[in-house]
Amino acid sequence: MKKLFTTIAVAASLAVAFTAKANAGAILDHVLATKTLTAAVGTDWGKASFLNDKHELDGCDVEIAKAIAKYLGVEAKFVTPAWDLITAGKWEGRWDMAMGQMTPTKARAEKLSFPGIYYYSRAVAVVHKNSKATKLSDLDGKVVGVVASTTQELYANQDLRPDWIGAQPIQYQFKPGHVKLYQGSSLILQDLRLGDGVRLDAILFDEYSALSAIKSGYPLKVLDEILYSEAGSISTLHGDKEFDGKIAAAIKSMKDDGTLSKLSIKWYGVDYTVEK
Image 1: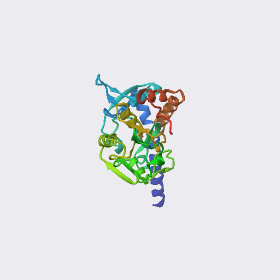
Image 2 (image 1 turned 30 degrees about the vertical axis):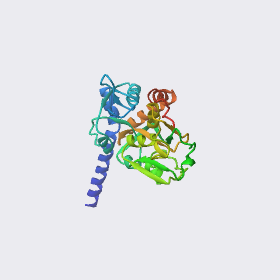
Image 3 (image 1 turned 45 degrees about the vertical axis):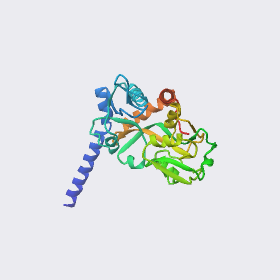
Image 4 (image 1 turned 90 degrees about the vertical axis):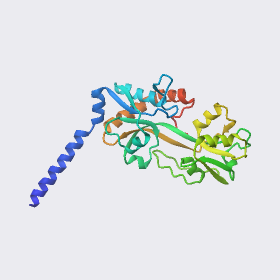
């Protein structure tokens, strides 16, 4: 009887090993066989991906996905699922990879793989243009606004514990006297534009969004020092290391030949492909 159980256990182990080997490279094989790389993007993700005047998907992420497809020798196809479906890992074969500059946290890594970091979101401090503040330490004891449930809120409360891939230790260079919470980016910008110290002394914000607001006419300025950089990666499902390797190689090639930097500057006006 003991020998029978041993034989069954060995057979089961061999079956698992065979299945794992058979599934290895399945996504890549499908992509190459169909000559199609299906990428999940958004229709309203700012300059990353959006519907242009021709009602076509456009943006930095769209161009990067097309470049990856070209690297693989296939055509790019796009789908636009909800963000929560992407992060939940409920893909069911409907797309091969997801864009969206997803922060590769430990919690997300339980369901997804992150083969290609291609973007770094930079958090900055923004003040009214008439503010005398020139450096982060000038904000010590001031009223600082943040959008609720963001990493900027955690930073303002000195409670940010970054767990994304390649995260650097956080250095807090000031302590607000009061942290004021907002439910969206529109109202926080409106309050700061009223004047220095009227309702806020500063806000913590995404650099690109801050620069866009200034470009559109908001009387604000960004302090030079970066609070922290948050990595953004392409995501895939676990299980196909060969496919992940190809994506990683494509992103590396685009970094090496300058394509990634050029696309970032084209769409954002800043090279967000390097960490600062």
